[in-house]
Image (cartoon, rainbow, N blue to C red; front, side, top):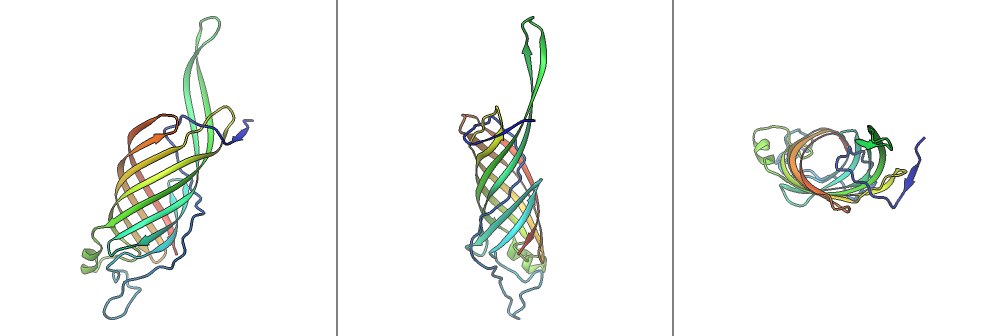
Length: 211
């Protein structure tokens, strides 16, 4: 059985699946825009962004986030937590008889993650005028995700790196009372403490619960 070692270690891994367990939370209650007749629960009554907390599944991960509305169409999404990564590598080696053979290695990594994501909801007012769903910031958005990942624990014999990324997204979000769905895609840049960097396409699907 492989042992798990704790920090400090650095891993030359460029791909990871996030399992985010967020324990970051900002105080604040959701606020809702009201129409002239005073209703606040109609699916399309909201004509500007609102603040709120949510728990969200993203891939195989779980995130707890706080979205702060600072303008009628602008928000900032804060999140933090941990992620799980499983990796597998295939290689070639040569023995003392000059025979070439295939080797395989795998690893398990737990890392911490924090991110800040400013969002611009560009069509909330248009959806409101057409009586479409706007509740809980249900609309299309443009955003830039600023993320940082650091290792917590890793399989013995491997080293882990600190990774940061900047990823512009184009996405949309829908909220039904408490259930939420978020879909986005983009192209991002990543860098790491071991010198690796690059540009990569990304796609995310989120399912969650909004308080």
